[in-house]
Length: 372
Image (cartoon, rainbow, N blue to C red; front, side, top):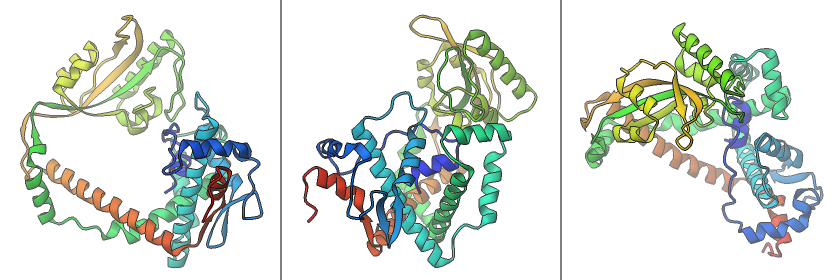
């Protein structure tokens, strides 16, 4: 599935994904492409500078790649260099090619996403927003509603193909679970208590945020007012994870409901004293009061936090009879099998398709590398 496209279709997701590195093109090759005016002036074997690739004759246009590129980089504090821009666009193009191959397979198998499926996905996506907020998020990402629907259709179509051919066929047997546990038993020996926690953070200085409401306190009074409002929401019974996704200013955790993962007891020493004391005192399911978060260097308040303890796992050996152990193993085995089979499936479909990547050829040509 197109990683950049997924960020469009899920707009609540983190838009600041790391710049994708080029798998096999060296920095020297990329630098040589600057003679190609970094993107605009390249010509190609397709006899049209607007066509960057073809998949079984189906064109992939420059405008489509550029749209995803703008979405990927807009709002970033630092724009990519020319080399990074080319690398990112080449990767976007490759994933568009992969998606087109899967879409053509879906059309052949009668698995194209329907209008009703697209509308249901759109309704779910819009549900946290007002119409005005939703329109603004589209505008901020340089998207139209038709762009979004098109990407949703692609995403749903790809999911349907992969589910039919890969996911639905994976079976994790009890015997597989038993063997994995036997071979990895030491991994389930917890040497110290583990604390699974989540938090909601509000900071006192202007910065980019990635919560669903695009909410950001600009100074300490605003931060204190906002965190009190958040606590009131929690006390009124609102779901902690939902509130975190809507209002938390931690860019690393707001999209997953503030989940901090499991923290060993010794790891709590690396956090601030207020948070550490709160986590140690909480029972699973409880959340703290407002905790001022201090800058370790200047000892000044830079934010306010509410932390929730999701679960506490005591030290000791975990038996296979523990449902959490079984679920962990099943998830691990399923994920491993899914990744392997999807990779192989993509490669087989690629081998069966006629793919012409004119942009990649242009990069090599501009670097003086002959395409033999």
